[in-house]
Length: 121
Picture 1 (cartoon, rainbow, N blue to C red):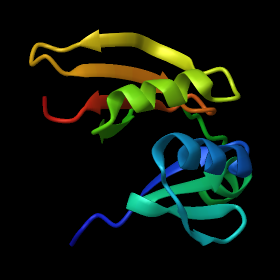
Picture 2: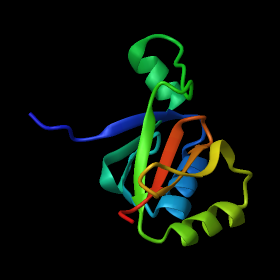
Picture 3: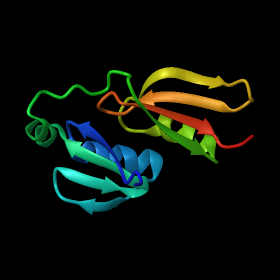
Picture 4: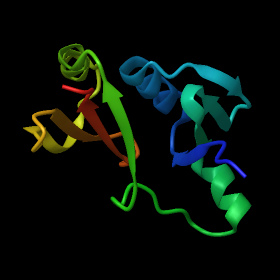
């Protein structure tokens, strides 16, 4: 057995596709309308489809999970965050961990936590 994908529920699929493409470089691999598979195995699914599938209201972005990325060009990524046309909400501002690596945690448009760490200093 192997893990194939991670699915997150989103309100606006187009907004989320733009967010993950523009900030993280994740290109659309398969677009089925309300279900979109991005590079690296991240799947976006519209809330209405998910709720119909599971038969109840979905709760997302409550801090019970995190997407983790490592970035070689951390300064470039920080510039992308600053220049992004929508306001980025931060869980924590830029910090330096105990290994000397810079880390920032933000929320995606639906409140999912994303950690981005400077790759191997």
